[in-house]
Image 1 (tube, rainbow, N blue to C red):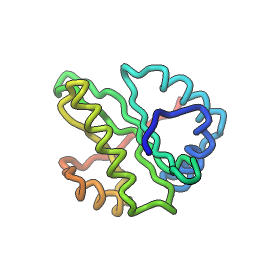
Image 2: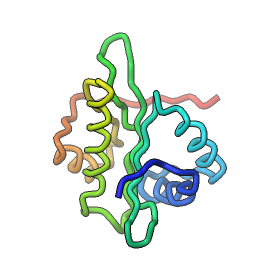
Image 3: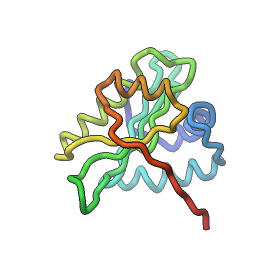
Length: 144
């Protein structure tokens, strides 16, 4: 079932981020970011998928408002991840459909996302639910 994110989700989300997305971060950072970002529902959207039998968090989506001078406002997916033991059960699709519904409620024009070049299974999933790849680019980052 879908629900809002809670601070108690931090450890499961941390585990999913490590195993599914390759983001090794501390539990302190996950806690800090859940507290901060979930309190800014104007700019951030979270939806958590909870297993009804075990009450475990098994997937989530996080998006933020994407605005620029060259495009209409839309959601930008920051993370979509489902525990590996629950892949191919429609959970990712349910999470993305909830995000799309929220985008429409907010009057946004669409949903955009980036997916790592090597994540070919994720690319197939996004194409399967109606997303198109329209750009190839490199990401540059400088940590300060």
